[in-house]
Each structure stands twice: as structure tokens, then as C-alpha cells.
Image (cartoon, rainbow, N blue to C red):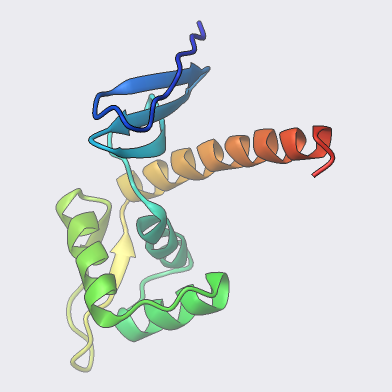
Length: 138
């Protein structure tokens, strides 16, 4: 079932705009898209890291390079290792044994499942957004 509500950006409360499995969550002055099935909400930086790791285990510099080539987004070390720490804490990535003073990371099965769900949600939102833009001649 689908329901709608008006999302007042100035109201620091939780309101949801639901369309099937898509949910727009508004909390404490921020809003983000999330699948109602998702056990964890991951943001753009996490999506980039997880997508890079789908290609195989990588250490920090290899992640930074791959993410920049893939998206044009350049992470600094602090940003990257902050994201990796959160993803590791959530069980979405795991650190592997050190190799030549570099610690590679790999995506877990749970991380791949969460990434797939998030990418499917974003693809659905992109299709809707592009269709609406086209219908408005934009």
C-alpha cells in the first residue's frame, strides 16, 4: 500500500513518503531516501566504497583511485578511513591481513546485499526523476 504526506523541511520530525518499497525519511532537519526493507541506511560515500570493493579487495590508495576514476569524487584519507570504519562496524566490509604495510578491505556478503538494495532503490528513483523531468520538458 502506498501513502503520501507533505514533507515540511522545517519540521524536525519523522515523516515518510512511501511508494512501494521507497521511503523518504525526514529526521532532525535532514532527509534521505531509503528502502523500507533496508536494515541499514548507507550514504553516497558508502555506496562508492562498496561499489569499488565489488571489483575485489583493495587497500586505501587503490580505493581512492578507483572511486575517483568511477565517479570523479576524490576522497581524502580521513574521509575514506572514516567510511571504512563505519562499514566495518556495520559488518558490510572486513579488513584483510596486512600486505606490504597496506591493509586491504573486502566487501562482505551482507555488504553486497545492502549495496544491491541501495542501488536498486536509487535506480528506481532515477527512473522516476528522469521521467518527470521529461514530462515537464526539462
